[in-house]
Length: 64
Image 1 (cartoon, rainbow, N blue to C red):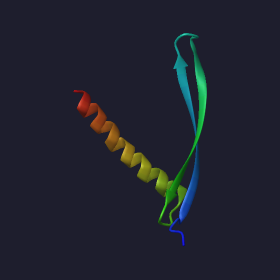
Image 2: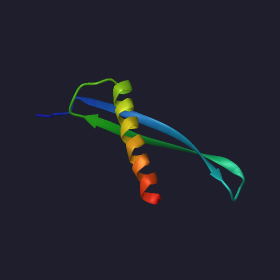
Image 3: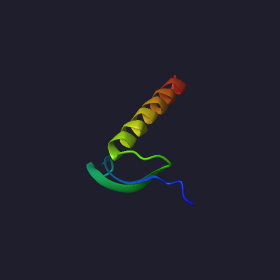
Image 4: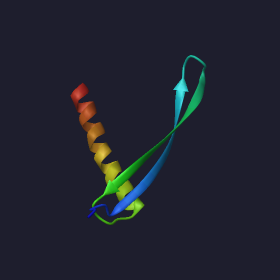
C-alpha cells in the first residue's frame, strides 16, 4: 500500500555569472516533489516558496 498522492517533476534553469570567463552559465536541474496529499503543482509551488522565504530570512538573521 502506498501513501503517495502527488508526484510533481520540477525542472529549474539557473543562470550563474562566471567571473573567470565573464559570461553567464546555464545550469538545469531536475527534482521531484512527492506528497502524501492530493494537490496541484501551483499550490505545492506556493508552499515551497513560503518555506524557503522563511529559511532565507533565518539565514540572513543568523549572519548578522
